[in-house]
Length: 264
Image (cartoon, one colour):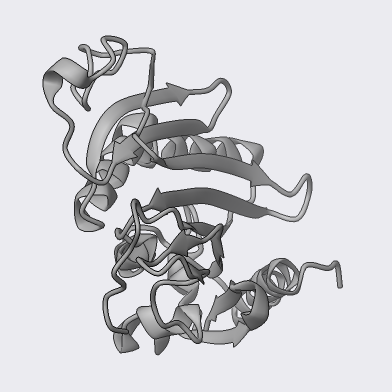
C-alpha cells in the first residue's frame, strides 16, 4: 500500500493478542508439582521481560518503563510501556525506568508512550487425569506506523506452542492531508499472511475474520505429536503400546477441547 500522507499523527491503534497453550502429561502429584515448578522457572518474569524487550526492538519501538511480577504459588506477569520514537531523557517521567531494572526486584512495572506490551502466564493441571496445561497470553498494542504483526514469528518460535490463538484488530482512524478518514493503513487478508511458511507448515490453521470491522482471528493446532515431548519424568520407550495409545488419546482430546473451545 502506498504510504499515506497524513494530517497529523497516525492515530490508528493496532493490537495483537497472542495466546498459546502447551500440554504435558505427568502422573503422580509429585511430578505434577515438579512440572509446575519447571514451567515457573522457565517462564519467570525475568525471562518474559527479555522476550518482551526483544519484541519491542523487533517492531521498532523504544522501552519507557517495565513492570514485572512473579506470583505465588505460580505464574508471572510483565508489562512494558513503549514509544514509537525515542523520547529525550529530560522529557521522561522520573517514575519510568527506561528498561533498566534494579537488582533482583520483586516486581517491576513498565510503561510505553502510546503503546504497551503485556504478558501473563497460567500453569495448571487436571485434578486426576495427568494432563497439565501451560497458557501464555501476550498483548502487543501499538499506535503510529509500527506494527505488532512483525513479532508474530518470534513469538511462535519462543514458546512451545501446541495451540496458538491470535486476534488482531485495528481501532480508530487517522486522517490524510485532505481530511479523509482511513480506518486501516496496511493490507491484510489474514494473520497467516504474516507467519512464515516454515511455522505455518507445523500447524493446521483456520481463520474467522470480520473484514468490514478490521477484526482478524486465527487458530492453529500442531499437526504432529511426538510422545516424548509431552511426557514429564518418564520416557515413551518405557511404556507399553497400550499405555502410549492411552496417553496420546488424552493429549489429543485435551488439545482439541482447547482448540474448539468445548468439552468433548
